Length: 450
Image (cartoon, rainbow, N blue to C red; front, side, top):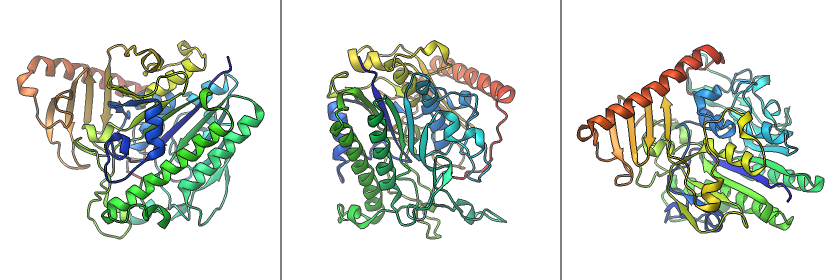
């Protein structure tokens, strides 16, 4: 049997509730809805971080972010360090199995030579390497609003490590177009392929052409732009999957869709100089948003699609995470997971046969926040609702099966469970901190520069 192809779609700052298959009622995402309908939709899918660089590191390496060497949002200057060269990625593993490997979209895992995509297993890649760009000029501009010297705006669009200029091209559409080019190249070679498609939408700045905004004329302005940006992503996913089908690769292609973290409320979304929070994205019933270890910052959409191999129409509720993508793909490709350090687990038995993953704890850390999920229980230590604000609670315990919004703090009623989960989360973080000091010497920027 021919080895399967793999596509991983990733969005940026997308809320749990911002797909129609995830409950949005004010706009539609028909192509992603179809993927969910024909495959498996995960109700409890998690990013491994509430911010983007660590989340991307976890997805590509199958590790908790701290074990991959990326714990914070990485700087955007052209010598910024990032994902260490010795840490293997999905692309590295699949390239070793004879796969063609491609990326089209946002990298944000470092610009130093060892951290660039070509040094992490990608044969060809297209996109930008910092945390955000203008969607039409492709200029990274974040440092302009910093007090003091700041950073000059920097053009940030590349193909195979060569700078390219495509002024005026809406970047979401450019990502999809280049991804289709890569699929056609791989099909012509008759080799299996891995395609990583990290969209930067709906990350700020809030840019969308009129043809997408016009689909939602009755929505409030901030919500309309967000819906338009997601609609452009949905079209791109649809075009990519249609090309896969046109080439006769539908049944032999496994695709994932997820997001890097919850929605942003950063005032800079509008680039208008005002300091008002942005309210365009929604977490549905979840509490918190980007930067927070409450559910709204880390629980995100999750879809897996593989016609003929996994039954369609599945809605799966076991806790799963982006670090599971690497071992799932490796297993499906016939690779040997024992040769890799992995914190995730293969989901193939779950999606193909209905066998849930073995019970496990899933951990998160972000600055002073630490969290753990075990079964239906979720413990958050020093949980923040808003970046930079004091912790809402020193200890917060929720039963997510009964209270997915973490409304009621059950800590006082379950002291033994709180003690046990606190000890586990603290021990996990202590080991991570020790490893960080001893192994990973990559410079962290210390500032949020997306």
